[in-house]
Image: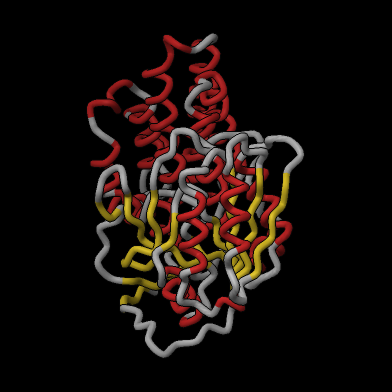
Length: 360
């Protein structure tokens, strides 16, 4: 079921509460604006708790945060959790998940900030149809534009839109029911880059309904000194290894329901992994090992398509794994991904016999 509407936040009162989780590392120039954006939310402050995780930042981020909290006099609650050693973004978020007590959780990167009515609008959408998650649009500073071109809000139970259709895969700027974390033991995979991609892949298969808000609720900026960039983009070998780990993690969970939608999601990640290898192989200590890992996972993926009778997915897999993939940009494929998924759903070994396979 898919419906579209718009949200009017005037004269509306939320009954659900939210825990805002903010990992902090290397953001002394941004943390004040981030916290002030939460303080200026139009949502009832007694329903908001802000959990700040200090991941052993080496700058003045925490001093700035404490000054902002000290000057606040409202009903919003603030808690600071201090890590004893730097443990990375995933562990910081997992600490926040463990500490959270409210109905919904929302992750915010500490170099970004919320628009003033962001939480109110997201919560109203969550409450209108008791959605498990609500995703907001966001403003992308680097590209000076809204990230998603959707013009209308939508509610849906179609997981294909989650896996391939709506927006850039991020854990932030999304209201998520806390009960999902409890029921399904959801956590971010620790010690690995690309944690949002793996987390969202796992999360999406457990939700019953979701909503997307076309208006922006979040301002995104890329901070090269932040908790992600400071680690991820300086270590090509680890990035390559973690691409393989991420692919394996998703393939381990690849089963019904939503096999086709999940497969297209993985195809996207496969294409990024292969693109990274081709661009960075001269800087890797063991490029042949990385290539071998990716190809082994690609073969495993192809065999899975064959077992499930999805020959069109098998062809896509073969295409993405070949040099010919780079002739066509992924954006072109993504533009038609939803139509492709409708076609793929009709493909089975009953319609395409095994005799067709040698022709691929």
